[in-house]
Length: 291
Image (tube, rainbow, N blue to C red; front, side, top):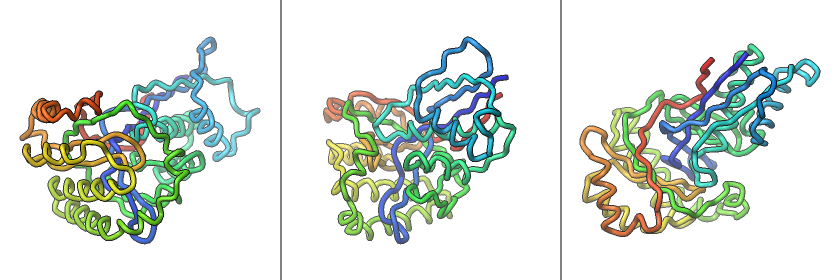
């Protein structure tokens, strides 16, 4: 038997900060995936993804399947998602493993259950939900599901510098998060209006407000130049990884050529720092089973 499951990456978050009484976020999934394969074929070498194996063990325990009841199994993770950049690579690996394991055990598992299990291993991105979702990534609570996934392109800008989420969390950002609370409230208001009106431009406003407020916590180099490019090309908006290093330039797929964005970035020497770039699109989130 062989079970495959996928879960998408993100390019940071649309919003993250102190929202509705505590830290919350809205990640957005892109068409870049981690693929996990479980197989009972002997002779396959299992890849050494510790977190994925922990997710497998955790899921078996959740469904009360003891070690003696489990047949020999191979677990392989296939992913090119950049690690330690704020692109939800760990969430993708862990969530896909949980989904594949549940299917392997012939069990049904919900998005909320996957979220709770993921959180037992580390703070989790909301890419595990099919649509844009306001999520308490520390407590595992779904606050607001939008039931909306807009059609948008994103130029993902990746620097060589890395930042592990655990390292980011070693520093207490609570004071600055509270100072940014009003900005995030405005960003959340834009987000709610965007969902109600299905407006990508209001969504871009929400993301840009949140990205700007995060400059006081984890500043992104070439911020002013990024704003210039967004303005001169009338892009949808800018978003960042609030606890990582990537930046996303959101654009209307029907109106903007991403090569124009790249040209303007190069003209302002932005790519001297963000030396890797990718053209991606927003995609449905969640774990997909591919048997």
